[in-house]
Image (cartoon, rainbow, N blue to C red):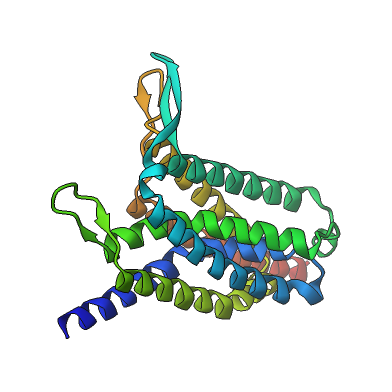
Length: 274
């Protein structure tokens, strides 16, 4: 009975963890799905997440089976005093994913500022296959850290080596958490996309949040690789700092929006008086 309660509690915690960490994923999915025809956007979002669920479960089995390989360095930077680091698979995936997220955010911000008419700013369309490929790929990148966190939370520690021991019940619990959180994302994906579509002023906020997500991933990947530049190590951005920055961005955006409405109202009154 105690084991059952433990597994149920772990399932709830893992599902909540996957859901919280999936918010930035939903932002990316909303942005990427805009690149296909409007009639196919919902299809791309739902099937992209659906296929990613199965691939995340497959990734879970791969990581559990080769967790030590993911921690073994395969590239070492030998330039002592200038650039130093040792990349393993974990750090490389997180670092590369963060750099791609930063590139995507900057590209979308530039595109938004470059077009003259917002309503015709998304004329360049991607194929359904290409959009789904990037949604699935980035879903796996975003879920990589959460899978490692799930292994640490659901597994038991070897008393001798302190390595995680993953038994069958723990694998079932982690797989169910991935499925449940994936279904939540499918339910929320269209709503997030529709909200951004109806409130286009928040698109800039969403893109800058995505940019900060990329910075966080790059800093975490650099920290995992023990990167140092001229003797200064790369420190990972803490989750508390990340959420604090996001909170500040949201408050600033709300205050800016309300102040802008007051300015527009004053201008209308002034123009009406004249």
